[in-house]
Length: 170
Image 1 (cartoon, rainbow, N blue to C red):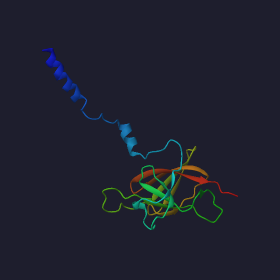
Image 2: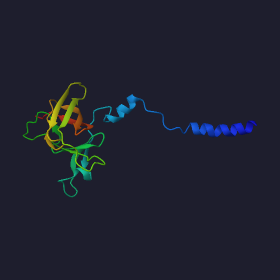
Image 3: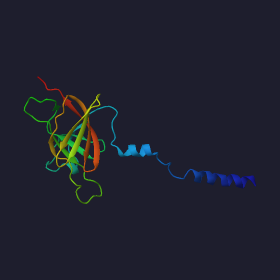
Image 4: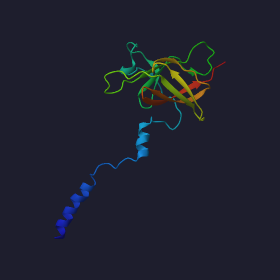
């Protein structure tokens, strides 16, 4: 009689392990909705072809400098490189912001300004810049050289990226 009990105990233990994942505490699920932030400020500059969703206006095998948001929801196409604090060369820190279309959305999202909240690495004081009409062409000047962590908010979406502004030479 003891043998059948052991045989029944094994399936019960196996089924207990299949109850599904443990619930995620509220603090973890809230953190999952925030953009991922790398531990150290670091610009992740790429030079190459843009993804199909971001290449409107570019032809053929055009290669451009760009930085993707940590979540991949937006890309900054850098027409001026390097980005420079207090440019004296007559050029601008021109950035074209292109947002990835939202999956499953058949119509464009309502256009709201792209709000850039930038914090320089090692400081806690943010500066805010806005691009009227949402992601698009912009000139983004920041008040000091350094690595800047950008929080990007537009049309109910959020992403982050790091951009480096170099000191003006000469």
